[in-house]
Length: 85
Image 1 (spheres, rainbow, N blue to C red):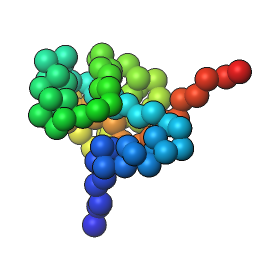
Image 2: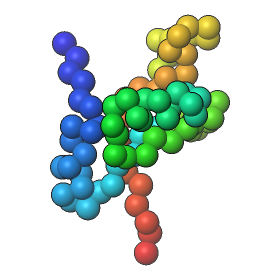
Image 3: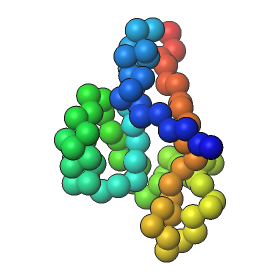
């Protein structure tokens, strides 16, 4: 059985260790704004135009082919981005 965790549910745990969070989606800007408002998110949602990042990172979920509702969706995961000194 899969267990899903909403990022907003664990955001405080990341912030406690000094890590800011953000999400990424391939949805249109108006859909992102609506989702952000509906769920009261306090972190940014970035737009992956045409799935460029999903493809560059090789994380496209192959279970959904072209023409399906979820085509372009990535496998779930976490990416840690940090500044190099």
